[in-house]
Image (cartoon, rainbow, N blue to C red; front, side):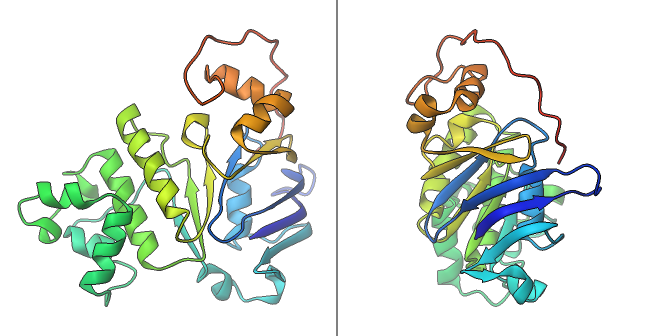
Length: 260
């Protein structure tokens, strides 16, 4: 996936994206960060072809999205949003929902990637256990991993994770962060995150501000080169290395005016 100077607004008089450019290569983990309202979710909506940019280009494998059908674009993508969707049925049914003819080996492969083996071992009937309406027998972190396994079973070229740890505790957040490292070896991975601790090991972090690409680089590089990123890290008390530290009392910038 590549965005080239993309501009877009839901209302023509109120642009959300004012010039966003970045690339997500195969087997690369890229994170989008920035304050609420800078356009992170809008980037996902454009990638999924729910909207077309007002200017600039969205490209898949170097081809402009406008030259591909929406179905062709969407077949390349899987999305896991912050509210992981799990339906009443067996664990196997939930994982194989989009690929009902998946083999046992294929299901086991994505279970391993999503670190679901311990969940299967805990359930009395394993993969054939009924997990309840909305996955009521699973924790939030376990539901996220079920959704991840389901997405990976479709073998997407690009996986979009929207705020994957927003509702998780520190233990489940750490587990999912580890899973993301392995997932990035399978496909291109683009993640929206408010918690910088979950994306500090990303191959590339894109900092959005006021609808524009404000900076890009690895966590340690951005702490040196980007005042905005340092500000975001300080607000979450992150030191170099991603460890909690003392708050940084630099003056805060005015809140962004753009809206998703």
